[in-house]
Length: 575
Image (cartoon, rainbow, N blue to C red; front, top):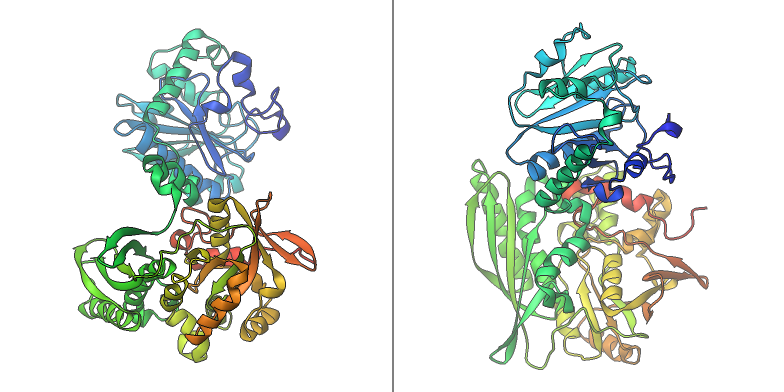
């Protein structure tokens, strides 16, 4: 069936995807108005009305009853896209010839596809289906599970879905080809034969009007299709191009007396520690709300003055929980400086926090920026890389309580801290050429710095030395310590520095009871932005940081999705 299918992408313009479009001179790939990894939407080449689209699977399935869960979810997103983007007010009809077995249910093409079109007038779909006497079965409510049974039992079906009447299907046996198309055409008093219709000039004109309709109403891809980097570059930087020069998370407001004022803002995702300490959920939320904002100040070498917080709370949130949140905020400010300056509260459907932090660059210091790294600079980190993930994985792998962790390991998940003292030290020296905090991961920082400075980043495996506790855990549990060390969670700083000044900087750090580690070197731009050197061999490091609007984003998909990413990422070849 795959070899005969004109919906399958076989790399063959004569028989594969869009081959029918090519034969009659219609747009091909350019006619796709929406797609993801599993499906795409394109106008029907013989449309019944303006706005007649097909939702087609990229993988060859006989019907949507047979698809996997990811593809079925993609179908639902595609239908919502048509409802909410292309057609905002119209009633829509979705229908499918469910060809569970070959050439059944009135299907001409045994590849899963659903028709979608606007209904500008009321149509009794059930009356229309039953009018011609081909179907004797009763209709059944269509769900993911009930349709899947059709595939299991090899029972063809016809399916329909309308905005106002839900989703239904009829089990069927033999039906005339294009049955559903024909009954809709009958309602509109049209003679209809798909093979002839698509070649007619008026049909081609209807196709182009359908495509124009989608383009006119199309507001672009959904954000999960773009990913974080494209959301920023294609939208924010398009409207505000001057922001692209630095890409810093905070901004410096020119001189404020003898100091420079730094302002940053960030929403707070649910802290990972709440997975393991639900009783103190809102306390951790309070500390994290300050941490996530203060870390941006630290990355610019700013001393915190304070923070403003806006919280949205459910109506049934308990008084004690919100008090717990405020105590977490107060203790964080007590530990790291500044105070709660003010804010706002609102009611809503779920708890969320947005913060705006304010800091100062003291006289005699300079703001740390992301742009400024040069070839031959050394790459340094502040903080114990990988220890956050040691805490998380110990809790999960051993199914233990947070209180059962040793105090040192527990501190990295229960009480992480922004590297403010270290940032203040770095801002004193003009030989620190670039700096950022690793809120999304060390590897993500390396990619960001490489792109912004038009250079490459080279990490030395023998310098990526894990803590003994981390090394012991990884050796016993089949985790690569490199993945854990280059990931996020520890709120480390990563900075570049002139190599001849490293000894001086280390001396100042030691005098202030803190330290940093050299892990690599900035090199002229290569084809690979970030690489690892081990035993004189070079290995490409993919960016496995937690990107927003991506399939492994912790913010959208939770902890398990990202842990799976850590397991599946291999910097070195698998033996």
